[in-house]
Image 1 (cartoon, rainbow, N blue to C red):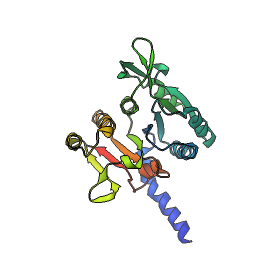
Image 2: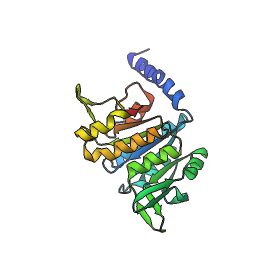
Image 3: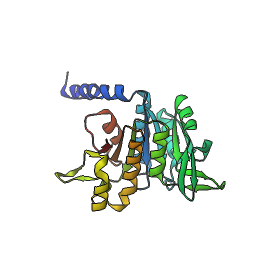
Image 4: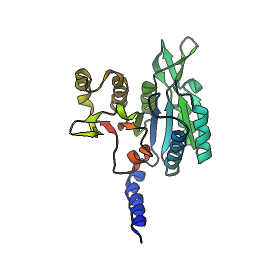
Length: 240
């Protein structure tokens, strides 16, 4: 057996316990305006999410309201072999808002989609209590939907420069961040103001029952697979 074949075998072996851990569980992924986008990134995302579904991991992808590529992404997922469906928070009253802030979520439609083998791609829009439709914060929408779906993990895809850097290793992100440290890091500016909302949404989700939340560089090829199915741990995981 060649070295290349051994490497491939080791990769597959390394993934097994993670596949067992996440099999049958739900992972909510938030793709915000700040994350890398474009056709090539979308095709790679579609391939990775389809692989997750094939090994038994249920995926819900939440797009910020400003992301323009929902239809193309749903098409890419279906070409890759996923049974993807494009939705908004308005569908099924999944997200209800007042004055632009989310007041309640209902995960029943998304749960039904997952149970029937679909991969929901949800744009962060909501039905307002006055009957109108409005955009809502994607970070908050993803976090609250993760709680409603009793998700195992919440993942926020970011641009590389937004990662929380480890002072001991300037090139790498902080690997694990305990929830109790977050308020002080926000006050000190280590977590900058433009990241505070995303981090706070993650903290709220974990405190409300999601096992962990991860801030991940969306520009790394196969970042989601590396985070979920390998020992690499390339993002910052927020946990108790």
